[in-house]
Image (cartoon, rainbow, N blue to C red; front, side, top):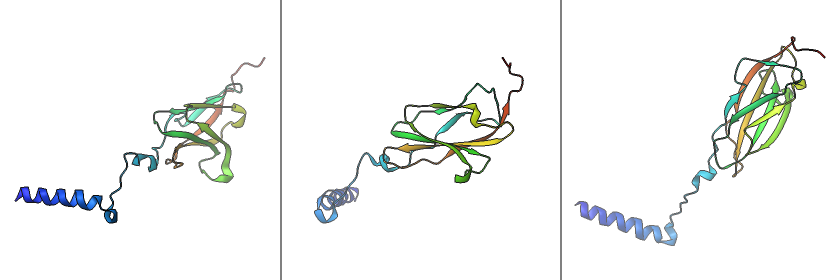
Length: 144
């Protein structure tokens, strides 16, 4: 009985699959059409960031996924990631794992949210990774 089932399976799979009317198509590169995984943020991921006026704020993430064309980096003022709150946007190459932003962009005591989206070679975008933080400007820095 098992031998008959095996013969029937081989017949259906081989002969029907080869038929032009019932062509079977597959690719080993199917992953190219899937959305890439969201980026993993490294810094800042805390509730508050202490800045000096001369020190840029470095945003960093793990750059651990191949098949990425680049990243979309955004900074919003406040918690809401609406276009009206967008204060900085950059399209970054896939080779970067950090970007430094001038501290003059940030106001003392304000909340900011940064987001990062990975863009695959197919053009599909990952889910957004994001984090909010409060800026504390260091008032004890030396003035020369």
